[in-house]
Length: 337
Ligand code: 5GP
Ligand code: MN
Image 1: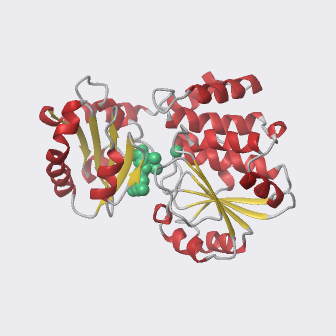
Image 2: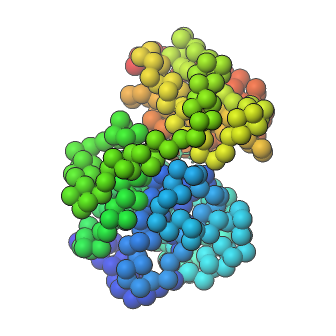
């Protein structure tokens, strides 16, 4: 067993107060890895709490333990109290304290608390005592599976835990469209052998939309899409008014950006939305073109080579224009793809 894992195994050998954290606007991987790890740690008799900066979307609300999650936006004092009382804090599916907003200040100040990062994003910050970073992993959920196997605790992989992990893998790989590896398929085979019902999970995660979401998708593709052939780029943008008109809630816009990449010629996709206080930008790319660099350099963000995000504090129009102004720098690279 790797030295780091031996030390973590020792730490987990006796009951501890453990807080599991993940990033703002939690997605399937953030939720699956957090609740999956909680289901694992609960079997040791630890006192565990999942604390997230903001609420989770409806499509993951079925996951076991979701009702016990503390949302920092809703109950900041209770959440901070848990963080401050923890012996161990897990940092899952994020690698910089700026991804957890106000919680980041609290976590950063807790110098005596053991922090364990498990994450697959590029360029992890150095603020944890143990950093498990694997940028080749499809998802943090895949890494949690490896973590459990690495600790030689495979008998603790229960079906509800497997369902959480499988969900993060499914959502972060777009149902095995990207970030796959032969090793991932072995992990997935292991989960299926355990009895995880993948068809049921597909239905829970992807075939559970309310009608308004499909109408929103149709609207985005028909009315809000701009194609810039010169840069092999597509943009979809939504205004505050669109948010009101379609009653867009958390998670309702998940996956829309990917539709742009269904066009053969499109190599770079941007989904730009007007939120109450910021403009959010989601970027996707095909092949050897890094959107991480664009997100980091121009939109205070980051992520992965082919999927990144960021934000801007200017208005929607200015943000779209800023994105367009950046494109000439990447024209050559985009046209080589
Ligand atoms: P999405 O576009 O689906 O929100 O996010 C795509 C990827 O980029 C995810 O891995 C997510 O964690 C990352 N990401 C999204 N927004 C931000 C951001 O504001 N900052 C950083 N560092 N990463 C982000
Ligand atoms: Mn992830």
